[in-house]
Image (cartoon, rainbow, N blue to C red):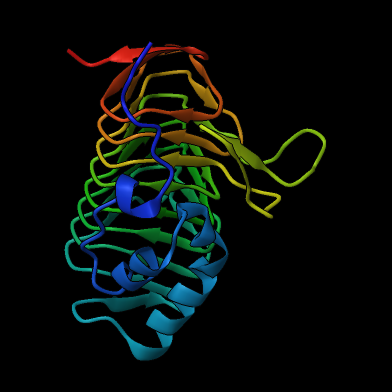
Length: 223
């Protein structure tokens, strides 16, 4: 069992260096508090403009050197950071913020989420109502489940229970978190900084930073 800290505070999970996003991260206590503000963040950027970004179409801002496959679908509003690649069949359903140098993979779906810098979701992923930190990675088929079967508000189970007041929360992945192929993160799963999750894992609750997750309740310190 890991003895590393189970982090849930925004400042413990993320080092946000994106200028227009940083104030929201700095002002929030918990990262899920940012999720209801994503539409506002994008709307403000569209209204005021972002240096180095241009309007791809109504409601969609893109940075320089963005590659978008012809078969990708982007529903406004959205912000796509510079040097990001959006691969064939990717589906952005609105209220999506993508930082620089990210990969949004083939047949992957994104909705009401934030991807910071160098995030990779390369193959068949679902990322809804989620925040993925710098250099976070989701293996092929990873699902960030965002809605409980009973439809009730999500409670995040860490060292204590956190009442979020939100009906939809997907995955909260700290910087450099890595989730293995075919894993399903139950609503409100938090993966700590620098933590790796084995393939085919069902995630639930809060996993410590600097750990290796071998099963739903099995995790050890990185050596």
